[in-house]
Length: 358
Ligand SMILES: *Cc1c(COP(=O)(O)O)cnc(C)c1O
Image (cartoon, rainbow, N blue to C red; front, side):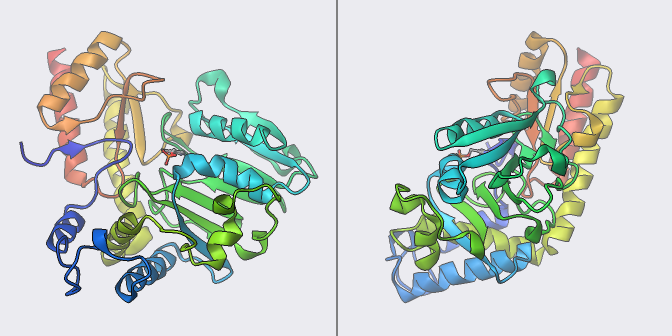
């Protein structure tokens, strides 16, 4: 079988060009006589890789100088603990629970202090994003935590919520680099890289500098943002190869017009799919229009057996990993930056045929 259209939510598709370059450089990186997989993270050749990766990421995301970029391990899930350990000074933090991952983040924060859920969309199976206004936030809360794009339920905040002068923390695992974002509106942005940036193993944190250095005393050294910031993400061995791959992906995104172009491409792809879902008699979107993600598109036929049949036949036709998350069923097409428009168009053509025959 040749390359398939891979709609996996993560780890997910990477640009073919990037994979080919990595393959070309696999056994001898840039005349070093060795693979990036084999290099000391303290070597000058690797130092150049991590520095260039950070520089390209900063350019791509337009990250101001008063923010640090950290390349960490442990996945976004480790950040569910790192955030309260580093940022809970009064011991209070407010959480918006708009899906499964934000629920997990909230639950983890409760271990470390008084975490409060100030809004949730659980009443309608997380099919929308609850409205947030500054008066909902507790006056003495240290921060407000949101998940900007809900990977499992296919919803996204229609805009950055207004939390007054509070520090806003966002899990952007499944939407980072999908569109331009005003970093200055956030205190911390974090993301597991395996959705839209790189292979698994890398977690990226963007943190405003004044938020460093207030971790509680018992914070594990490895989870203290200041340790990592002071050591340029090299306190210990970083996820070297995943960082190198992220670097190639950032270069690819820059070469292809940066995040303005990514947003245009992503909105176009999403519109092709949603327009079909809204006109189809068989398939329908599970998300209210205003809150639809442009990265993760969830849909159902309304019949679990038919959903199953669809996923099976789609996979046979080369459209793989369309099964929805095990907790919600149905289908989900994750259409991150690396998914070409052609993949979405062909999927819709396949869905039209399936609809005719079923
Ligand atoms: C995938 C995902 C996570 C979990 O990421 P890990 O890197 O597997 O820990 C958390 N939040 C969001 C929004 C995700 O999409």
